[in-house]
Length: 60
Picture (tube, rainbow, N blue to C red):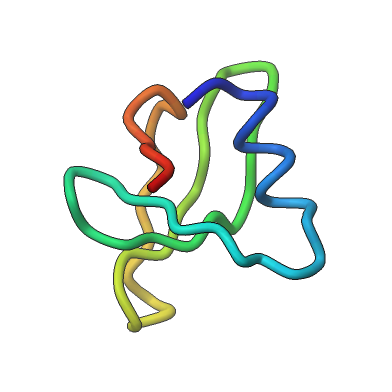
C-alpha cells in the first residue's frame, strides 16, 4: 500500500476497508506522510499497536 491510500483509508468516515499486516487484520490509527509510516492496531486489543512502513500494509 502507498501513503496516499493509507491516508484515504484512515480518513474515511465509514472505515469499511479490510487492511492486513502480514495476514493479520489491522486498524489504521495514524499515518505519518513524511516518513511513510502508519500506526496500526493489531487485532481486537486496542493496546496492541505497531508502527510500520505503509508498504507492509495490504488491502483485501
